[in-house]
Length: 435
Image (cartoon, rainbow, N blue to C red; front, top):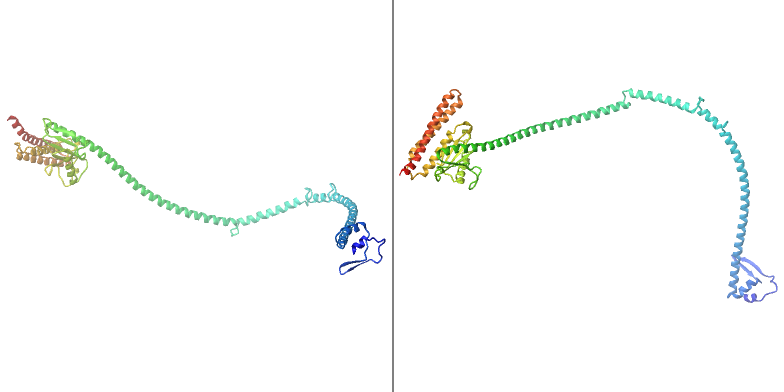
């Protein structure tokens, strides 16, 4: 029906239109609108009632917004007016305050008669008796004097409040503790040094012993070498007088070793050797068993028929043995000292060994074994007499010349016996040559 009324324009609005608000709603009765735009839009819309309702709502909101904008502009204008008035009033008040502040600043901080200048002059000027620095100086002087007095009393007192006393006690305690520790360390060090001294003494003694042993070993080696050479020279002289050949073989190895120092080839100067005598020189004392084993080895290695052990003195003969005593019929011990100047004992041993070898090799020859044996026994007896006389010479220095003559005579007698042995051994050869 509304579109009908909208399309039918009345010449004037009806007087009976009413608008009321009921229960939060707007009620419009008999409302007539002749606005061309509203009529056109309502006519173009599908639902004229919805359009009218939307138009009223939208229009109301636009009117509300326009009214709010109008109020805002009003408030803004009022605020700007109030701000201008406030600014003018603040400017006037600030100017008054600044003028008043300038007056107070001049009054307080004036260079000539300002309150601050006067107060500073009163409290800090040098000519003012009440100046702060003078008061501070006086207070500091008084405090310093009091502190010095208190410190003097405290440092000179013997009470526990005196820090020096505490420091002294602590220092003395530490010093005592350090002294005790040092004493303990010194005692321990002394014990260690004593132990080290004892150990060094022992090591020194051992070193000296080792050095002495090494020196003795070197002397023994050198002396042994010299002794071996002296023995070879003496035997060479004895061999040359008998037509034998002496050969020093100590530096040359045989079949199985180097045992045997000098080898005598009997009668090798005139033809084939009739036997071999091996001499073993020792500059140290061996046991009887060791000496016999040494001679057995020399016989085997050098192919000898008789072996003789030669030592520098009777003290170095094997234990419980005598010189010029035979063992097993092919071994003999003898003492020969090159420094003594006498080769008699060596000559006897040489002659006995030579006689034994030739006697064993001459069983088919006409050699009188009894005669040889008798001469050997006489030579041994003569050597016993020589040793007895030498013992007497070592025990008594008197009568040395006479005893030496006796010894020399006995030596000549022994040499005569040895010569007789050689004659007896050579007799069968001479008879064979005559035949």
